[in-house]
Image (tube, rainbow, N blue to C red; front, side, top):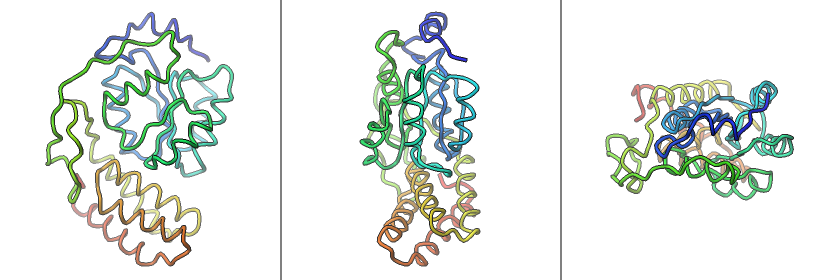
Length: 260
């Protein structure tokens, strides 16, 4: 079941253009849009990728094979990714590289305390940042070749969601652009959750999930609505207006066909 990392890297021959060649990444991520970005990053880096969309699925995967890299989203539908990180970190033999990811950068300290080697703030869309994070989390020996640098260019405005501020200039061809259909699937999932009249923990998960996909899509209005819901939940206020606002925003984006 276990992969020998030394043999893996020596036979696959990673290069600066594909520095993760020969590695297998398990992405534990409930958002299809975020996972599609991860798939593109792995593809362009030379790594294979498998996906688990919840804790249960991830544990089932890890019983069958041992990936080289595990990337765990902290907010999952059936519990906290921190619990899975702690389990993996305590396992023997240990997974060579264990990373956490979240739209809440304040969660980095808890992730590292649970046993993560590194923290990836969302949105995870920069090829060079992704490669550096994974390479930095791998054992010092053996470690694949460093990624090749590329020049910087601004992100085209046509790729930004309505109302989104343009991010800082990124390297040419450095930012991946996930299929908008994956984002539509995530929004349809939100619509289904809204239709179930979520309460309690289900409502907290809805706010967290929506905030994450809005962040990945650079959709500022949707993210603000999700964060307002989370804040009202935390402070014990009524959430009726938040739900109506979110429902309207999600409905508008689904009706438009493509939010990006």
